[in-house]
Length: 278
Image (cartoon, rainbow, N blue to C red; front, side, top):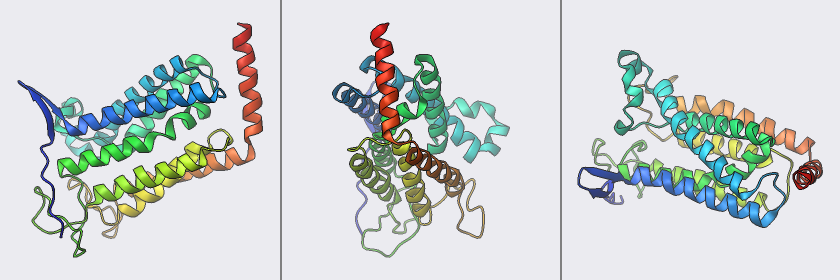
């Protein structure tokens, strides 16, 4: 058994103001995505948007992520409590964010901005999602620091006793997800991103990769207490929500394969010509 490192969830306190590590992880993930996406656009020159538009894009996506994450958690995982107390949706300081809700909100934000600047959504999504694993890694580390979302009991030597659990050594499932959704998926997207692909390919790989990793980890991650298992003592809400993400990712990969990068390149060059004429 490995001792759980007791880290104060509050990273900084100034008077009544508390800055939590979990909130800082969101800032780290969003900031890293903004910096790397902007840097890539500047260096590459093949994206149909400029660095200033990348900043606006990240703002739209981040806003959708936060709002969608909160709404998703409330509707997917805490609907009964919401029906009894609708104001629960706005009590964000009590915690509760959903990846799947954040995903939908982020894509919606990206879609709105894509319409504003007249750029294909899939191109913008490919730019953003290649860096999202950084945010996922940071977020799971935030879960670990909070001592939440732990795994099932285990006799493996790296089991940990989480302060808010029942005193049994448990899988550090937050670290499994940080390694899978963050490091492993991030490295895969980095390697695949070295070659120009059809629009939506990177996003599709992210969707399918995340779905597989999340579905597998859910087998040893304890579900939210207010929901529990949905079927047969093993199916969780996280797994149910992950299935459509996997299917959508597969469809996006198929679309990208049938619409290779040469078409994307022609489109980008045409867009650049239009901007030059204007």
